[in-house]
Length: 317
Image (cartoon, rainbow, N blue to C red):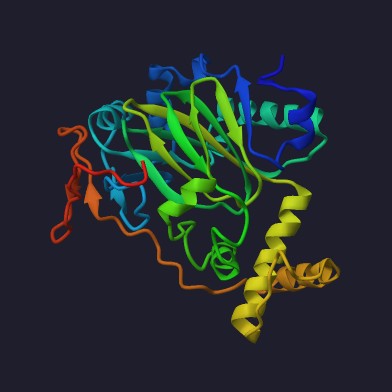
């Protein structure tokens, strides 16, 4: 039994183009309301990330990390429905046997249909509030976004120099910074905009910038990150370029540098990682709000933290 509805064209261009697939997971028992609450209860609480955000989807700086001590699965789901929250259950396939088996099935199917072998596959479960959003950013691995419940408006942008600089993407590869990038509304003139519905899966080329805005309903999605040998090679070239820029003052470009130099860059990246890797200055996530089981959906900000306030104009929706 296959999970994804393939065609010859989608199998050939998987991971290389913006592609929308149909899938058969939207009605899976794994993602019913009760199953999600039970999964939240058994998922390691220290791995669960809870965020809130402002009301302007163009602002990457308005993203805040919170505490959820004492919150049960039912409390978290009630909070998502009533508030402005984004739950991120990272690497669920490593923490839950049923989800792990599903992830294995997905990648066995990808390998069968495309011939591509997946490395370092991580399945994340996203449970998010009506009208929540994720600002403009890019990921170093390849990504599949599976929609289970609700509708997300996804903006996908080309992988070229008009949308990020070499230094910016290198900083993400080096973990010097998070995945956020400066956003310009003019970017949207070249974006692919798709309303992702339950039963659809969207995938895009490696490092394609994107941003996401939920519809006016609770959303449940699977965000699956993975590498292929080719994608891992590319990621290591980015890593080495970052080292060459930061350690030696060079100005490499992944698009313009000769391909003949890439094997030497791979060696540099592997040697650097073997000795502990690049020591960047990425700031750790610091909580600035708390959740209370008795007040579902309410964001309880720390003293001195200014709450986000809704405005009439929502730029970049």
